[in-house]
Image (cartoon, rainbow, N blue to C red; front, side, top):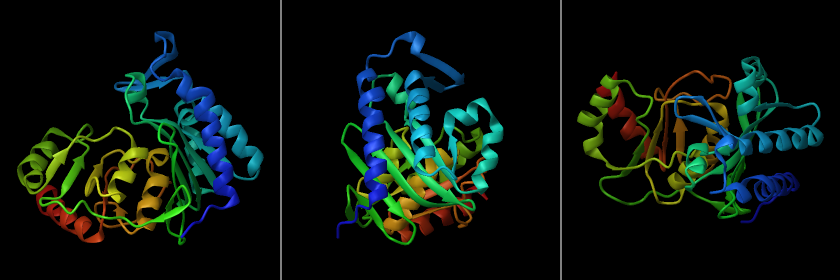
Length: 270
């Protein structure tokens, strides 16, 4: 089944243009003065800001009555987060910035459209592969217009990419002792635009996220759920974009794998 709406085409063209103009020419060509640190292990580059400015202006023209919440806009003014409960576009202009600054893949651009705190459409773009993962709520998940269904790796034990950077020391110890032995652990890609596709395309079975910022997860969570995988809070509740400071999110390539991991987490981490 092929499904590529006029809006999908419009977003694809915007993402391609932004990548070809601002991102790809600077990959492995950034100068030191084009990189700053917003915080520990949190770089921002001239690319992040340039792409966000371009996309914000383009989306404003596309839908003048819809607010825009961009990662870098929030970094400059936290009150922008107040717009997350309204109809809004959510932009991650360079997902995987740390990889990009190190001259490594993967990296991408993410856009979500949300209303009343819930994502209703999402686009995850990998400019190196020219791959657009896109979904609308209730209509399924697609890659470049072709419908996809999430599949597991089929491996035993299942393959898990567990984000450890924001766990406490006790949480890491519990994870290592009581959960990790049941899975084959692999490195996280440090890029949500890559991690969510891995969970649908038979590469990973499980992924955990401690930070759940909307520009990282709104589009991907919707897309994987529409593909037939499962993304939810550890307690099973839906992911909402207007809870940016709430921690903990679990994604899996199938509901059964999600449930098994969640049970282990509940028993081990409380």
